[in-house]
Image (cartoon, rainbow, N blue to C red; front, side):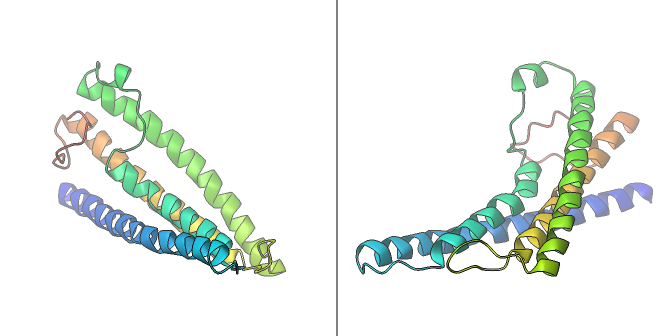
Length: 182
C-alpha cells in the first residue's frame, strides 16, 4: 500500500511538472512574436513600443524558471558524467541524493527571498523602471511557483533513489533516454 502511495505521488508530481514545462514552452512563440514585432515597429515603422522589452524579459524569465523542474524531470541538467558513469547504481543514487539535497536547500532560500520580494512589491507597488513601468509582483509569484515545482520534482527524485537504496529495486520504471542508472 505504501509502495502504491509513493508511486501515485511520484506520478502526480511528474504530471504537474510535465504539464507546466510544456505550457511554459508554449510561451516561446509568443516571446519570438513580441521580439519580431518590436524589431518591425522599431526599424520599419520607426515607432518602437514601450512594452515589448519588458514583456519579453518577463516571458523569458517565465520560460526558463518554469522549465527548470521539467528539465530536471528529463535529466537535461548538467552532470559530471566522467565520474557519474563509472560508479555503481547505488553510488549514483547516493550522488543523486547529495545533489538533490543541495538543490532543495538553495531552492528553499530562493523561495524565502522571493516571498520577501513579493510582499515588498505588493506593499510598495514596485514597478519595473521603464517607460511602461509594469508591476513586479507577478514575477515573484512565478519564482515561488517555479521553485516549488522544482522542489517537488527533487522530492520525487529523492523518493525514487531512497526507495532504490532501501529495497534494491526501482520505485518507478526508468524512461528511455534517462541516465539514472537503475
